[in-house]
Length: 137
Image (tube, rainbow, N blue to C red; front, side, top):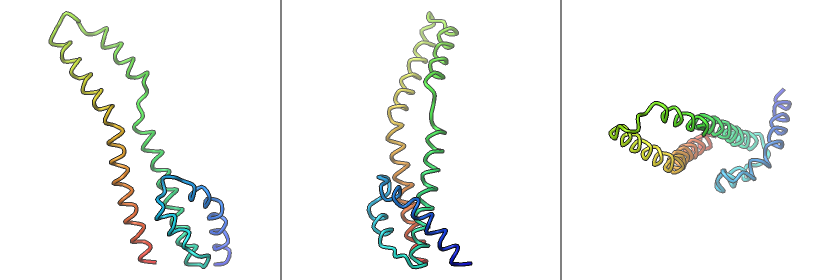
């Protein structure tokens, strides 16, 4: 029974190994640790853990990207509605809207930087977790 499991693990590893090693988001250190694992039962378990964590990371990134995407048509429709509602002769409201638009533009411009900082922190945590798992093995 154990031999069957090992064979299925080998097939899964062979299927995903090339994509994992060619992925630019995986650090060279992790790739080196992965390739350093042999084909013994223990080495296959370690490889499988690396691939499972990589798959989970890929899935999580896709979910995060889809969650934070704002459709440009939604923004345009909001501004069209705002244009119909606002009385342009009221200087105070126009100034308030201009200030909020500037804040929105600044937020949009800094979004990419915040994403990079979040991703860096997440990758550091992931690296520490992988190192702990490998130390346990």
